[in-house]
Image 1 (cartoon, rainbow, N blue to C red):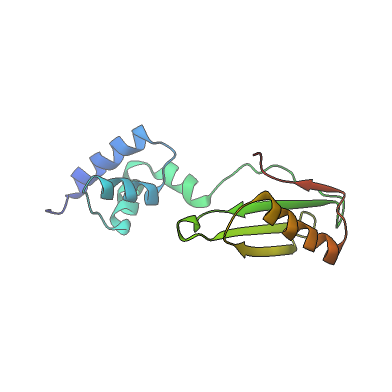
Image 2: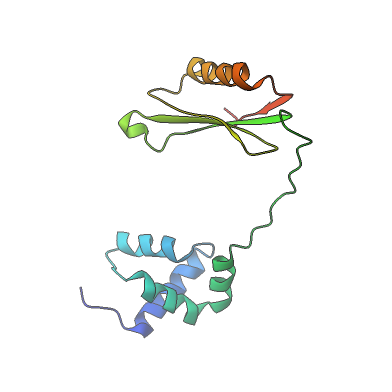
Length: 140
């Protein structure tokens, strides 16, 4: 495929930015690849700088309004979570952190995500570190 001129690339980026205003350069890159348009990331950064400089600066600064997060002390709140990104290979990652210190209480790998497996990991952490006041988990 012939390389797009800067003007043509700017127009494609402008249309994409209007359709998907919250997408950054990496998302645009993937979208264009799926459409058969192969453009180097550096050219996309340059096109975004020309088309939407304020939006690019905003996304590059990663300005996020974060909630205030206060935990009174250690053992007051534990966070349990799991990761399934490797499930196609039968691998599940389970983790638990102390909300106050962000200390990892456990990070375990298993071949399933059964509640009994998660419970056993949690009980191991309780045995090792004590009982927390509260536990926060994702909605099921």
